[in-house]
Image 1 (cartoon, rainbow, N blue to C red):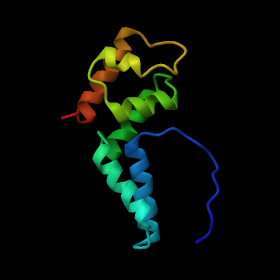
Image 2: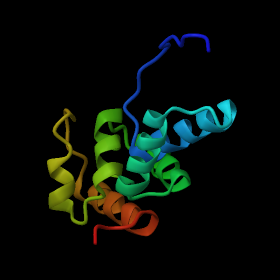
Image 3: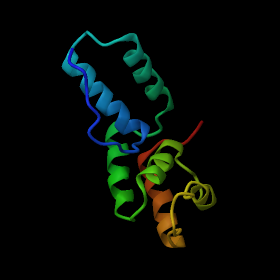
Length: 116
């Protein structure tokens, strides 16, 4: 197999990572390593959004001008309240207004599963 070259780096949520790794696994057929299998199993356990929902929520949160790092943390953790959400916005220069925070929590609640 040819070596890979990193062309870009992006912070992405677990669901999008899982989707990309599964696409890779499909391309190489049954020849995936134990490490890749383990990563997929781990992402299956920890992901709180389906692959499609993670991508949809990611694109919606980008519209609010949030940084990729913040978006990935938000989707991975799925905060259940505005206060929980605020704690994940440490990389933002400016915290969005209360209505935007409420919209984000509602979006997460409608698209992703909560803990438990």
